[in-house]
Length: 289
Image (tube, rainbow, N blue to C red; front, side, top):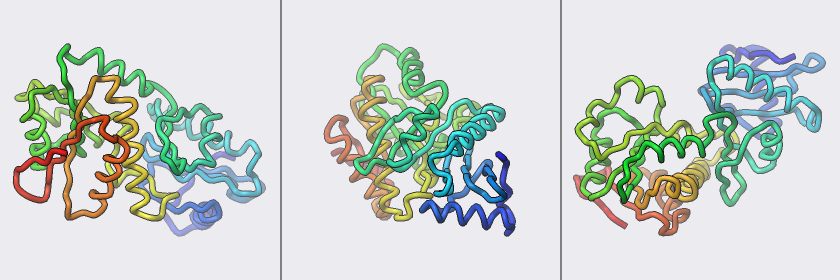
C-alpha cells in the first residue's frame, strides 16, 4: 500500500523509515515536501521523499529488491508530484541506482567520475529550456554566465554583476534560488542593466546547501560532486547552446568548501570557458584566471 508517512513525531513509522534508510546505506536529509512509503506484509518495504521538485532518500528493503516495489514507489511519487502541479522532477543518485531510475523515465544530465548521476524526468527538458533561452537572446556576441545564489539585491549579487559589467559582453545571470522569485518582481534593481539577461536556473543549478547529502556523508565529497555536475552541465550543455565563453562566480576564500568547489570547477572546465573569480572576502578587486 502506497502511503504518505508522517515522520514529524517519534513514532513507529518514523523508526521503520530510519531503519530502512540505514539498511540501504542512506541517512535522513531534510527538508521534505512529502515522505512516502509502501507497506508489504505489515512492514515498511520501500520509501522515498520529495523536496519540491527534487527526489531524495529512495530506498527499497533488500528482501524486496528485484520486485515491482521500486516502480510502484516511483509511480506513486510521480503521480503525487503531478497532482501538486510539479511536472518535472530531479534527482541525484549513486551509480548502482541510475539504471533503475532510467527505467521509470529519468534522463541522465551529468555524471561524475565516481558515477554520481544527475537526472531529470518531465518537461520542459534541459534541451527545451536552453532552446527557449537561445530564442530569447539578442543577436550579440560574446556572452558570459554569472552564477548567483539569490536574485535578491545583496552586496554579493552586486559584486558579481559589477565584475560582469566591467567587460564588453552580455551576461546570462543564472540564479540558483526559488524560480518563483523571478516571477514576483524580486529583481527590479536589474532593470537598469539591459546587458544582463536574468534567468532562474529551473532546478539545474542549486545552492550548495540544497544538494542532497543522504548518500554522501562526507561534506567535501558532496561539494566535489556538486561542483563536478554543475560544471559539466555548464561546459557540455549550457555554454555551447547559448554561445557562452566566460563564467563568473564568487569565492569566499575563508570557506574551505568554496575553495574545493572552485578547484573542482576549474578541473572540469579545463579552459573550455574563461573563468573569472570575484573575491567575496575582501575589497572590490576582481581576480581573473
